Image (cartoon, rainbow, N blue to C red; front, side, top):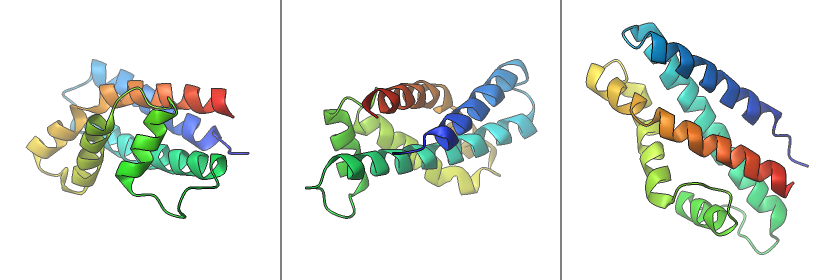
Length: 130
């Protein structure tokens, strides 16, 4: 059985900081917290997908590429968005080490609300499949 608690907790912390950011979008410290929570929630989302896929199918290779993971998850109805959107999240996640640059930080934050919808959908889909 896959424990979804850490993933659910990460989503909750993301939700909390997005609410604060909506009220205090001028506060760079809150923006930075949004980025950090996006970062670890994204990482957990991918880990949960891989664990789920590995637990469900014996015919999968030991390690899936990112694209294979997202495509398979989409085939199973686990994701709200397609490979293109998840690739965008991945690119933004990879940019997080450069968020000291204002423009990059704002670019990363620009995808967080869409990402929030996607991870809520994923969590619900995983709960239904487990």
